[in-house]
Structures are given as C-alpha cells and as structure tokens.
Length: 186
Image 1 (spheres, rainbow, N blue to C red):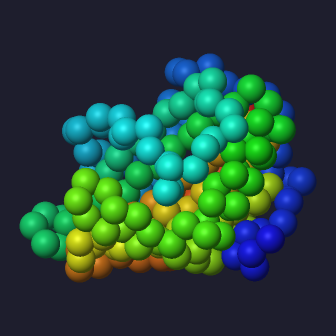
Image 2 (cartoon, helix red, strand yellow):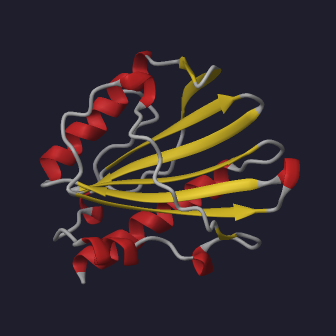
Image 3 (tube, rainbow, N blue to C red):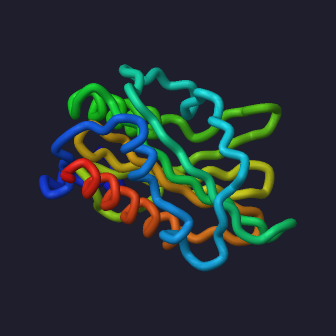
C-alpha cells in the first residue's frame, strides 16, 4: 500500500446509511468554506469518469455533490465536495481499494484532447483510509482528496490556474468527513 494512503481509523466509522435528502444536507455549506467562496450556480453532475477508466466494482446507491467558486478570470478557483454512499462498508472499501490500485500505475491520460497528469499526494488521515491525487491539465492544477468512511466515499478538492492550496483541499476533506460522520451518527 503506498505511503500516502492512511490506515484505518475506527473512530471515523459511520453507524447508518443516509437517504438522498440527508446525504445532501450532510454536504458542506457555503458557510463552511474559506473566505471568498460562493456556491456555484451550475451544479451539473460530472460525467461518470474514473482515472484511466479503471473499473469500479460497485455503484453508489446514493450520491450528492456541491460546487463552489472563488474569484474570476485567471485567478478563479473552484472547490467541490462529494459523498458517494454504497450498500455497505465492504462495497465502499472495494471501490476505494480499486482507486488506490489504479493510481499505482495510472500516471496520466488524454481526455477531451488534453493531457491529464496524475500523481498521488499526501492527505490528512481522516475516516478509515485516505488518498490524495494531484491532477495537472492544460496549465491548471486540481488537488483532490478521497476518504473512506464506513459505507461512504467522501471527496473534496480545489483547483485553479494561478492559485491552488493543498491545505484548503485537506481542510475541506477533513470537514466533509466530520460532517458526514456526525450526520450518520445522528
């Protein structure tokens, strides 16, 4: 297992699954964001795309996502948080492990005519396991963190052309795991 993937943390396990309204309510809100972010009015779901098209062994039963923006022009930054819930913790762990395995060999790919370059990066140890991925494409950088927490795959990331902060990505992932865990225990 790569050094950047954290080991299990039993304190972060969720105790129940959530329905779609509860899952959406568990997403970070604009008031949870660092100064300057607003909710992006375009919440269009992304294409169902995986890094280097690796196969996910299971499909989420419920998922929710929220996008934020900051600034404008070349200095614009984007942030996203997401929750993908699986039937049980074993399914979520299998999906997380497939991501980790893919990132051991997937260093980049061409997408929409542009070269994406990927690198595993450090992330805080939250939830049961974590992995961070740096994505460089067409002069922009995206820092994306993933955490496994019981039946949930939590994601948080930031991206931009001129400014992108690993600390913000790590903070968002930590906050999102905490917010989900609180909702699942409540």
